[in-house]
Length: 135
Image 1 (cartoon, rainbow, N blue to C red):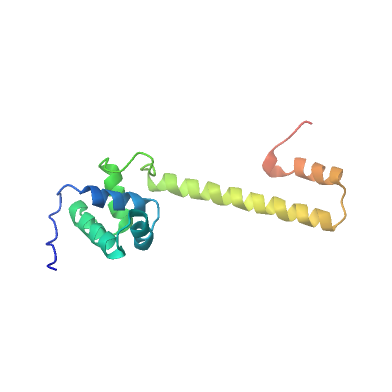
Image 2: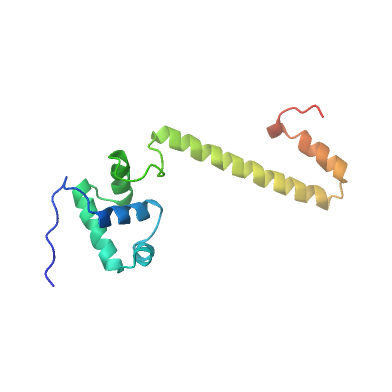
């Protein structure tokens, strides 16, 4: 079987190339996308390579970002934001996860010290991360 020549940059994407980009935008591997589409991983890889050329991309994330910028992929994808906005969101998520872990550890430690439920509730209410509460 003869190999198809690579397309030129700027050519429109085929429906198959868009399908594959949509799936990789959701984090699917070539193998997972192949299973979802009922085609071989080699066919998925070929569609990805052709989409890269047409979009002028060199990496999956770059191809997906370009496709979203051009409105080629659904609006359900990640919003295009500045790097600072992404960094802020990551910091906030990390801070929330750390606070949750700290509360879990504090609850576990309070239980092992034999504190009663009222004292544990008071400790939670006085936690500086919760702000003041007038119960």
